[in-house]
Length: 592
Image (cartoon, rainbow, N blue to C red; front, side, top):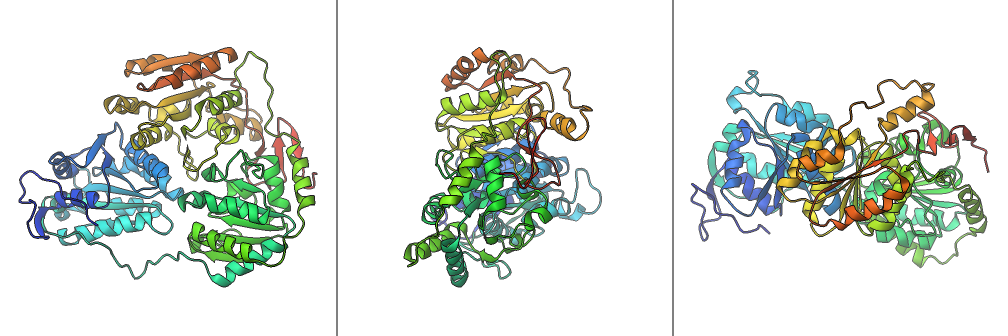
């Protein structure tokens, strides 16, 4: 149901008037956003979108937060969407405004995050004439959006916005771009916002095929080595409780991808950790040796299964559950494909298992084998009491931070956080998975803190990543967004250095960061608190001091061991059986 309409300047909109009112296009946009439940827009103004900014300024229900770079506007809206499950909204101008937003849009696209990005454009009469700050926003973004629109007629503006939100949040979510020429924003027409839209070519299947669900239940009943491989789609669908029930009913161990951390509690005895390139030994061995693999909202990407041919060489039955039919069979052919919403499908699968007459096959040998893999303690690391190990920082933070929401940048710090932070609930881990975008951590934290002002929101970052969007410290100050920034400072582009260490004979080309700023002093220059830790003994007191600051943004610069690498590791193009544990230990595919 549409929300109450705001009062605009210079418009005839008043309570009690007919439903179809005469509004400018810019005013229609504000009305549409409010009708969709949007209360916050992140953006940066420019000439092509000034009519929209004027409409926003003329009312009180929709709030705009001004970032310092358009990329951060999309990242902040993205972080908001990841943490809440609602559609995030960003507003950018034409030309460099929308091109600066491209990285944020692509980041959301690869991780299936619901966004609506509104971009301005030159007047329709000037499109194609190389006008000032004109660019083909639709053409540029076509490969990195779920859909995009160029609104050439004010008569189609309202229904286009309705379609944009419907597409963004339904089925497999994703970003939708709506490009609005300036003359459309300024034109006046009757306004009616539709309650719903029908799109004949777009009807996502929500409930899985009953016969395939029964077949999946039979496979799980007969499995001697079942395994649940849980991806980000389970978080999107709100399927965590159903995953937990399935693990119990099927007596199955569970692995969660980087995008699904927290979808199954890390404290649960059935949890084996993250799979893939920097996953645990036990998670990857189980992936290789299970006889029935249930993939839930996951896409068998290269960072999880490694070499496809190697992965498929091992015989196993695969049940693949995904709302996007294009994702099923794209890289690995399943035995039982089930298209549908993960929660609904799992609810039906769990019901089938509860009603089954035959008992489960014996799994004692499977759990004994897993116990042997766990005993290798693949995430163990050495401490000397002097140099600060980054893993120690993350483990200490996990112990102290409680139910905080963790926003990560991209790099070694991201992998250490994924390995060593104990996530027990979904939507507590906000990071860029598919695109791997450096610089997201701080804007993500802004979006999350705005959504949950009473929660601790912590950005884990590195000395390379933080400098990508460090200007957003100004946004934190202006809008009172007291986030905590834990900076693992090793003086390197750490993940680049590690790849050079492993694959390029330790030739460290352009991965050492010289002329780093004094990060605590820089934080203070923006009006925040700057702290530092240079010894292991200082880590816990510094973290406690940072967490104690509830009303101020804090940047804690921790000087960690620059020689530390993320282990385990699987080199690009290798199979899951070719794991590196430490500097030289290689575990062959036949390893126990």
